Image (cartoon, helix red, strand yellow):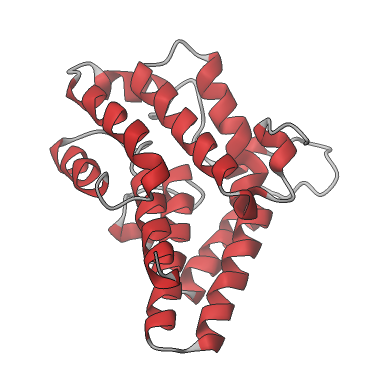
Length: 211
C-alpha cells in the first residue's frame, strides 16, 4: 500500500468512526455501510460486525437515552473539564479554539450536523478532513501543505480530541448501553491502539500496557 493509499484509508477510517455517535437514520446507516469497505484493513472485520447491529429498530431510542439532549453521557469536549484542574479551560475558550481549527482548514461543521463544534463526531470528522487534505497534498507533490496538515492533526489530537475521548469511551462502557455503542467504543479504542503514532503521548489513558 502506497503512502497516499494509507492516508486515504486513514481518512476513510476516521470518517467511518465519526458517524458512529450520531443519531441513526437511513442516510447515516447507508453512509456507514458504504464506508466499511473503504476503511483501513485492520478495522474491517469489526466494522462488518458493527454494521449488523444497525438493523435494530431500538437503536435510535437508545441513542437519545445515551447521547441525545439530556442523555446520560455528554458527547462534548467542554463537559470533560474538571473545575480546579491545572490547565483547565473554560467552555468558551474550548469552543473558540476548536472552531478556529475548523476555519483554518476549511472544515464546515454545519454541513456535518447541527451541533456545537466540540461534539465528538465533529472532532473526529475534522481529523478525517485533515487526512484527506494530506492525501491531496501528497498527490500534488506539495510537501509544505502536507506538513502543515500533519502538524495541525497532531496539535488538534493532543490539545483536544485525545484529552477527553478515552474518558468518553469509558463512560459508554460503564452504562447499560446498546451493544452498537459499546462495540463502537471498542472499535475506536482499538484503532487508536493499533496506531501508536496517533495516541502517543497519551497511550496510558487508553489502557495500553507498557512493554
